Image (cartoon, rainbow, N blue to C red; front, side, top):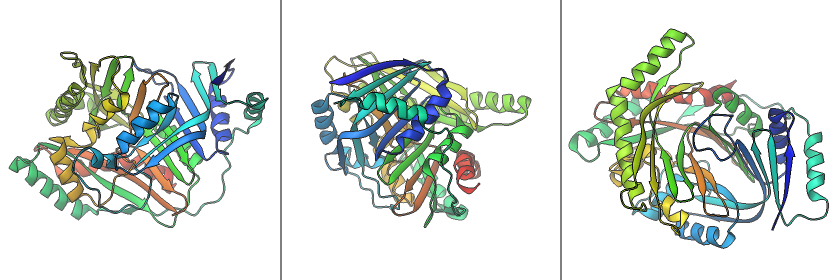
Length: 430
C-alpha cells in the first residue's frame, strides 16, 4: 500500500529545484520533466522517483523475460532504462565495441518515494511509509536550498572517438552498403568522451536542461552512474489499449535571425532527403507496432510535422495502434525495440552494419528511459542529446548520430552531428 498526499504548490519551478536538490541523498533517483512543453500525450508535468524498495539489474541475456517477470510480480510503479544492447536479447547480434561507461544493460527499481507534479498540484505516493516519514520529508524539502552545491572541478577536455577523416571513410562504407542494397537507411553514431574527469552531475543536468528545455528531460542517478538527458523524442507510450510512437528524423539548426530561422524551418519541412528519412522510419514503426496491434488499428496520425526546440528544428511523426486487453506491456516494447529512429531499415541488417562501423558500445545511449505504472501503462523516451557519467571510472561520454540514406552528403551529416552535440559540449567545456 502507498500512503497518498496531495498539496498545492505556490511556486512550481522553485519547488522542482528544491525537490531535485533534496533527492541527491538517495542512491537511486529518476527525475523526468516535460519543461511545461505542451503535447497531446503527457500524463504529468514532472515526476521524481527515489529510494529503491526493490530493483532489477541485468545484462542482455533473457533481459526482457526478466523484466516481464519483475514488472508483473511488482505490479507497482517501476522506473529505469533499457540499453540499446538489449537488441542482443531479441536478435542474433553482439556488442563488442569499446565501453568506457560500464552501465548494466537493464536497470529498473520500485521507488519507496514518488512525487508527481501536474500544474501546481503535487501528489506524493509513499510505499510502506513509517510514522511521520512523509511529513518529515515535506518539511525537509521546504528547507532545502535552491542553489546546487558547486565545487571546483578541473576543465574537461573532450576527445573524439572517430576523427573527421575516419568519419568520412566510415560513411563511404555505409553508403556502399546502401548502394549495394544491403540496407536503405541506418543511423550512424559517434562518441565524444573525456577520461580521468569529474563533473557535478546535477549541475551539468540543470545547465543542459536550461539550454535545451526538451519535453523529455531526465536525470538518473544509480549509485555511481548518471544519465543527464535533454531528449526531445518519445519512443513509446501505452495508455490503456492505445500505443503511441513518435519517431524523430530530420534536423535543422536554429538561427537568432527570425527570418532566417523561419526559412530554415520551412526548408526542413520540404526537404526531400529529410522527409524520405522520416517516412522510411515511419514505415518501420508501423511494421513493428503491427506485431502486437489489433488488426487494422495501426495509423499514422501525423506525418513529417516540424517542431521547434531551443537548439534545433525537428521533423516528427506520430504512429498509433491498439492492442488487445491483457497484452503484456513488456511484449509491446520488446516487439519494437530498439526504436527505428536509432537503427535503420531493414532493422537487423542496419544494426549489424552499425556494430561493424561504430567504435563505441552504445549502451544506454539510443536506448530508452521511462516507467511502468501499476496498471501496465508505460512511457519511454529515446536517450539522445544526453551526457553519461561513470563517477567511479571518471569517464564522461556523449554520442550523436544522423540517419544515412542514399541521398546523404557526408559533410552535411558531420555538420548535423556537431549541431546536435553543441549543447552537451557547451555544458561540459564551459
